[in-house]
Image (cartoon, rainbow, N blue to C red; front, side, top):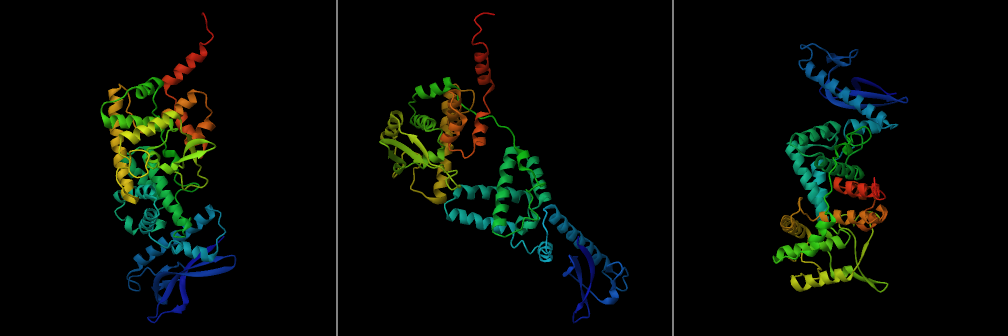
Amino acid sequence: MATFKVLLHSANKRKDGTYSVSLRIIKNMKSKYISLQLYAKKEEWDDVNERFKCDKRVCPNYKEYNARIIQLLARAQKVERDFEYDKVDWTLNQFEDAFLYKSKQGKFLEFALLCIKDMKDTGHIGNAKVWEKVLCNMKLFDKKLSARYFQEIDVKYVTAYNQFMEKRGWSGNTRKHDMKTLRAILNRAIVAKECSSTFYPFGKGGFCISALEEETRKRYLPQEYLLRVMNTKFENKPREVARRLFLFSYFCYGMSFIDMANLKKENLMMEGGKEYIVYKRHKTEHSKNARFIRIPVTDKLKRMLLWFRENTVLIGNYLLPLVSKDYDGEKLYDHLRRRLARYNERLKEIGEELGFTEKLTSYVSRHSMAMTLQSSGVSREMISQVMGHKELATTNTYLDSFGDTEVERMTISSLYKNAVSI
C-alpha cells in the first residue's frame, strides 16, 4: 500500500525564494518526489492541510492552486487504482511515468497517420483506406482529435464516441467495425511503445466491442434462382460479362471480387498432372499461417476463361476483365473500387430482370456457394477450408443463417418422409 503527501520540497529552493510543491509517494519503504509544477514560499504553505493557505493577503491565487492540487491528487489515486486493477506490482518509476504521461510519447492522430503512410508504402492500401475512414469519422466526433494524446482515448472517450455514432443512426455492426479499427490503432501503438496499456479502453472491464454486433441475414440464391443465372444469357454485353463473373466466383468456391481481379496467368499451376488456380486470399494473405487455396480448373472453368479471353479486353497477364488500366498501389485500389461498383450495378439489373426478390450482389455468389455445399451434406470443416477461413467460427456466420424457407423445406421433408398415410 502506498501513501501520498503533498508538501513543499524544501531541498529545492528557487532563486525567487519559492519551493516546488511536490507529491511524495512512499511504497515499500522507498520514496519519490514528483513536482506538481506549482511553487510557494514557506509563509504561503499550510503543512497540516497540505494546501496553500486560504488567505488572499498571503496567497491571492490560493483557490486556483488548491483546486489544481485536488485534481492532481485524484489523478495519482486513479493511477494507483489502475495498477491495482491490472494487478501490476508497480515501481515508483512506473508510477511517475503513468502520472506524468511519460509512457505516452506521441499524439494519437500523428501516430495513426504515420501508420497509414507506412501501409500505403508497403502496399496495404485497403487497410490504409479503412484507417483513413475511421479517422474521418472520429474527426466528426472530436474537433480536437489532432491534439489528443493516447491517454485521452480512454473508456470514457470511447463510450462517448459510440454514443455519437449511435445518435447518427449508424448500425451496431458499423460501430463495431469502427471500434475494431480504433482498437487496432491502439494495439499497434502499444507494441511500438508509443503508449502504455494503463488507459487501454478495450481490455478486461473496458468497452465491449462484441456487444455491438447485430445479426445480419446472409443473402444467397435458392437453387432455382441459381439455375436461372446459369441458363440465361444476355444480349447486353456488360450484363453478360457480369453474369459470367458471378458464376466464375461461384464455381471458384465463392472467390471474392478482389481475388478475381488479382488473378494472373501465374496463378494457373500444374500439380500432379492437373491444372489448378492457386492463390492466397487478398484479405488474409499477410496473416500468420495464411493458406493457399487450390481450385481445380474444370472443363467448365476452362471454357469460362476462354470466353473472357476471346470476348473481353484483358490487360497484361490478368485472367479476367476487371483491371482495365495499368495501375498499381493506391490508383489500382481506387480503380477496382469503381469497377466493383459497376459490377454490382450490372448484377442488380440481372437480378431485377430475372425476377429475384432480393438484390443480387457480388457477395451473394460466396454465400450461395457455401449454402449449396451445406445443403449437399458437405461438412462445415471442409466448407471452411475451401472458403479460406482461418477459423470455423467465421464459416458459421455464413451457414447459421439458413433462411426460414429453407429450414421449413428441409424440416418438413425430413419429418414427413416416411409418413405414407396419416
